[in-house]
Length: 324
Image (cartoon, rainbow, N blue to C red; front, side):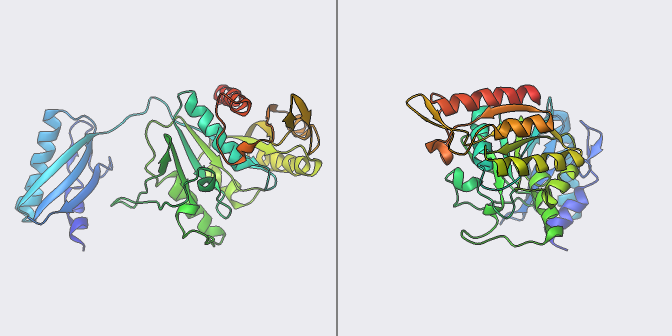
């Protein structure tokens, strides 16, 4: 057996006196290594970082590491377990069809929430068509992991994000059969080292009503959902189907966002893709039309709050906060 695994197994039953639970029960062993001097290096997470706790654990670990296993010494860094005052809220962002700007809406909403003082994590669950890294202009990245097989999310402008784009080489597609999709979701939801300070998770879903939407209940039972559509009749028709499918899966649909609603020139609105498709979807699903977003140059670049699109996104974010 690998020596690191042996060390972990040997110390797993040591009690953290601040919680009266074992290091294994608390998942307290965050790192174990052995340096060139045959000294064991550890990072241990404790319930309370007080002197009595750290002394007791250090003494117990030293007995195992030095006396039983024969290492020259042990160095332990203690960290205090963070506690959350509240659980992060999860918002699923869905669409009936592709090409309606769902990912762009997700990214803009994330920035709007941060401007309101919220911490945001984005889960790019559009497994086959991951586009979030491109929108963030951050494609050259690979997700790194720790000794326990957990991964660290990418972070930009205080927004954390995971995406399948970071699991494969650039310009290569991720090819997975249905059963493997659940493993990717588990990686993103359960095996990612998200910040404890996150207030909202935004989940960018793939278009349609496939495996991903059906599997999400396993990872976030209290998630809410918004449907993104464009004004076109065909887009609205499919968005309604997606909304009903979500309700059949007991997903709580809280509103509709109409993207690419109009193009504004000299205070005149031009409805290039038709009109009122979002209202039709909202009326059919008996939910609120949360926003009508203009066609702008901000399709890939996050809107500034001083510009009209940014102001609209800020108002949308405020509505989302209230609804969640």
